[in-house]
Image (cartoon, rainbow, N blue to C red; front, side, top):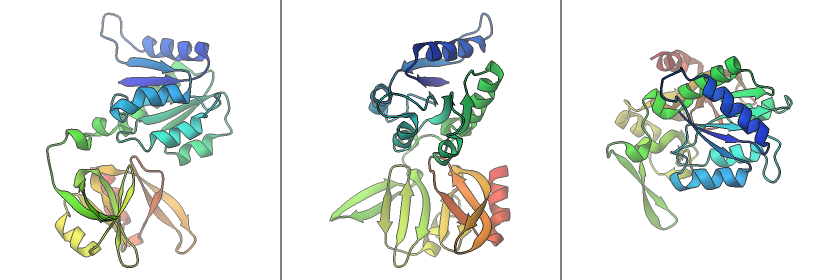
Length: 253
């Protein structure tokens, strides 16, 4: 696993590196390839050239000079290949904000080896390649959507689409990087891409490969119900009661 440690304290980075090395068995090759950054700017400079593809997990401090860890996590989500994020901090009061940013775990210092290993196991399950989801750039060429965007036609690979959502007179096409507007109907998309996308609501289809979790959720319009969380996306999408079973079955596959 490729891991980036981001912490402004050299001793904290050294401690995490030691804990990671302790998980290796004597005589075996190292299980982890570890890099370090002391600031958010250094981390982004290291990740940006590959769009995040060179890193599986970021062990991220929160309180750092300049851009803090929460702001950096927000930036990481916009990468083409966002790494899993595990916050490692001395402060427990940012946990809610951290999980709103889709962090896979939240560790408080001093970190115990067993707790770090649990976090890495969660992170490994969250990394798309660990789930058998190849990044779009390395997948075999596949179908793409042709989208008219501000006077130009853009080709958006279907493998990058996380969900389709019907709005008033158009469909929102959401990828990890941005949203697009598409003419058409959700029923047509469902019929065409039934193998790749799952209906979760009358107004939404989600990529089967991206479904991460089903959670209890309160919607101001519909009241208490269920919502689905997708890999690489912070927002929750409402699930209708009739589709809850189908979503559970998809997660269990």
